[in-house]
Length: 465
Ligand code: GLU
Image 1 (cartoon, rainbow, N blue to C red):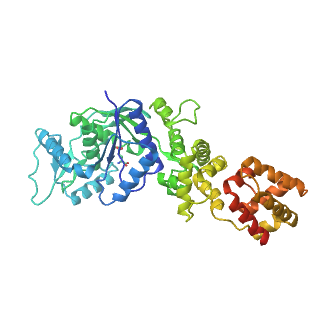
Image 2 (cartoon, helix red, strand yellow; image 1 turned 90 degrees about the vertical axis):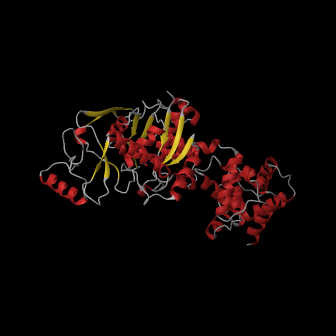
């Protein structure tokens, strides 16, 4: 059996963290088994679906590198197919027309509630042997209802939650097509899962209640029932259900906030799944390890600190060109052009293990491109008379110095000694003068990458101030 999984988002918003985890697990399962991963856009809720949301989902998946093998399939483009299956079911007697009006349904519900019963359709238009149905009322467009089995149970072995069972008496003959002929949600999912030969349905556990209906429908269609894995929800850092309150819920917000996709993926992989104590692993490794048996049935709790830690870890591994491109793009957003300035790749390597995310990287690089003005308070604290003297002497020495880190480091050291300053008493004012802040990576590397002209200019600026 070739494994076929799908991710089936409703395009009513961004790709959020929970959806991304569902997509990741479905993708990984298909990859693990050499199968196919299908993207299906469930856009039948016309009022809430938007093309922007479709794009946001596709962008999010692309950013994460969760490539699909088939699709995207759009349910709104499959309407003819759904109608065809409805006709087949009507012909086979597994579905029937129901003419009950809204008023009748309201009255039925009121009666049932008065008797403290669960409101459900009473099957008045359900054809049965020996039962005579009233003639269809004129001018009423009927809905189509599924002829749900009446007795027994519908059960499945959930890959995450274990055996789940529903009594058929709990499920009524639900509507599969509305009066205007449009098919309903559970019906479309079933036709698609069947037509797309889905073998494993991995989705959020908010769908557990749909599953018995979907299984009954599949069986009525004579279709094989896939395996189901219902993922528990994700809680926020505070233990509450993950929601917009928790800030970055859209995957692309993480991109904007400076996270690397591999950090987010590694983080998501461990959100409700484990492989021993492994915390840090590549996607290749994840795909080799991933299985449905080690998904936890309890809710997973989001942990921003851990995500940040992973992000810092992956930043340290990222290569110079990639970091340079990211920093360049993020500086450009701040209106800063790097062209003609210090080497951005060299700077990225200097800073990649000093920052937690790509925005911090861009911020750290900013003063290399835009000469900072040390704040008055900082200037007063660090650019003392003694320091200025040292900087003045250093400037003269640097004007003639061989522009290489080792030589530059030596020049700072010698100047400090000459002026009777300890190394930090010169190096810190130097940083303030060059970058507007008292800390930076090693001063010789900073001097080297800034270049002679910029260094001399910036020193002159603070010395003449
Ligand atoms: N469209 C559904 C959702 O976004 C998913 C349906 C499914 O996976 O079966 O929640």
